[in-house]
Length: 323
Image (cartoon, rainbow, N blue to C red; front, side):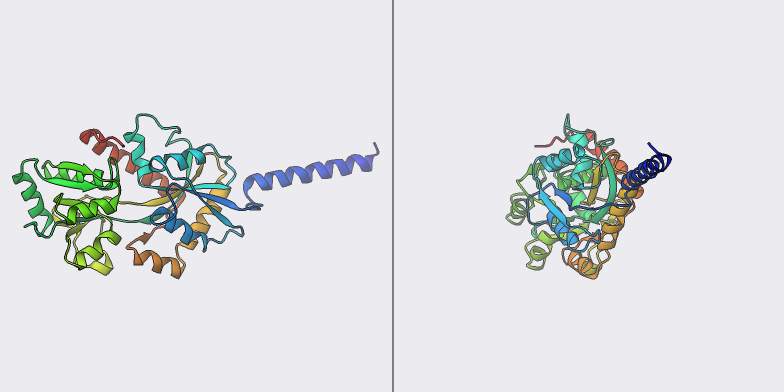
C-alpha cells in the first residue's frame, strides 16, 4: 500500500470515528420517526395530552403514538425499559408510575434504575366533592362529620391504588378520621355513586366534577392542588382549608430508557417543553383544567423521587394494594 493510500485509509477511518461520535452524542438525532408509548387506550388523560403535543413537537420527525394499555401503565413502562436507549422510544407515564413501586410486590423493571427522566408534562388535581345532601360546606366541617361517624363514612375512588384512593388515605391520616373505601372501575362510575348517594365523598377529576357541580348534583369543598384554579377561584385548596402541605397531583410525564445519551435527552426535553408553550396546547389544556409544566430532566427526576417517598408512606400506613 502506498503512502497516499495509507493516508486516505487514515482519513476515512478518522471520518468514520467522527461520524460515530457525532451519532452517539445525538448530533444526527433524530433521523427516523420517534415512538411515544402511552399506557392507556386512545381517548382522554395521558393519550389526549400525548396526541395534542405530538402535533406541536419540533423534532424534525414524526411522533408515532403507540397505545399499550394495561396494569396501570406497567405494560407501557416495561416496553420502554427494554427498548434500545437511542432516543427513538419514550413513554408517557402518569402519577401511578411512582406509586406502583410500592403497590405491587414485584415489577418487571426497576423504577429507579431503568428509566431516564425527560420532563413532567402536566399537573392535574382533584376536587374533594360530596353529595349535595351533606351538611359539610368546608373541609374542616367534612372532617368533623367524618370523625362523628366513627369510621362509617364511605368514599369512592376509581380503583384500588389510584390517585383518588391514596389521596383520601392521606387526608384520613392528616384529619385523624376513618372511612370505608369503595373502589369503582373508573372515575365515571365513582362520580355516579357519589351523585346517587351510594357513597358520601370522593376525589374526582375537574372535567368530571365541574358539569355536575354546575348542575347542582355535587358540592365541591376544595381542590387538591397547591393553589386555586384561576377559572374556579372561589374553590379553596385543601391545604389552605386547615391541612397545610396536602397535595395530590395527578401528573403526566415522559421517560426514556436508562442510558439514553444526555444530548438526546436534552433534545427531547427541549422539544416537549417547547410544545407545551404553544398557544393552542396551553388553551386546550386549560379547557380541561390541566396545567403545562415542562420541568427539566433533573427537576422531574427529583420530583419523582419525592413522589415515591411520599406515597410509599401512605401506602404502607393504609395497607393499600393494587387490583
